Length: 303
Image 1 (cartoon, rainbow, N blue to C red):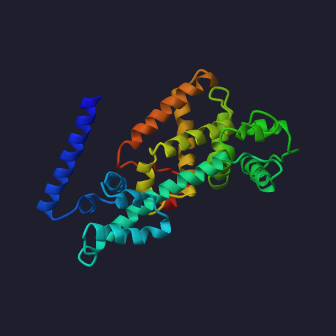
Image 2: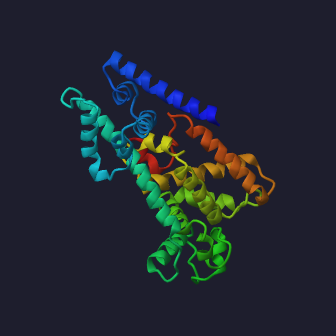
Image 3: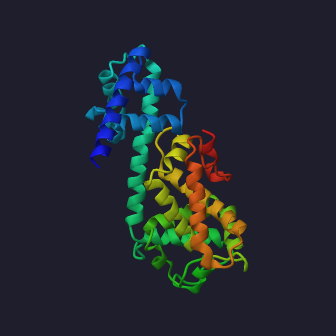
């Protein structure tokens, strides 16, 4: 243990000495070298994030946690601390601002998603009920719901006659995602629902949607989705970005499920875990963007 601690501090000191030498040789600090030598996207933003968090300066360390409204002032503070003339290096401030918007936005997105996940479905809340009924109308436009409490809910993949009990794990987040998919990608949502009723590949559409919401949530809070969001969101990633990512994952899992040719629904956990690992491997590539091939995401992917 003592040897490991000594080795850690030795490497840390060696790294800082190396950075000092490189700055003297190039005339540029680490932030400048990253912005000038790395193209915009996840590769640049993640390097900037690591550099700021790993700095010996508390001001730089805390810069990744500022309020979005304070980012411009934070950039000025960084330039002053690093003794960088903004008139000579105007592009640096622009690049740092874009990176900080993504970094701070990702943190705020986690908080927003977590808030939805923790909010339980309330059948006494008219907004919650309206969203649930919208889900039915989008998925089954030609089949009127005969009653709020009905076995019909099983037709779209809920477990019983009242869907509210199925949202316990993911709270309102699961409902938000399902409604987003059904409302904005109605054709694909209806096709996936139809396929999920096939005798050979059957699964509960709504329950799987809530489960894939959990998968997307875990990718988000673990930081794995930084690669994707930093590549597709030019500024701060939003809840819409997250919902579009869910749509992509839901669609891809559906295809993956069929390709795996499971014996029955009992193989769900095995297939899900295999799918999760595949997505993780893809996100390890700093160039990776989970590019959905449906309408809801086209405007963002092309930005």
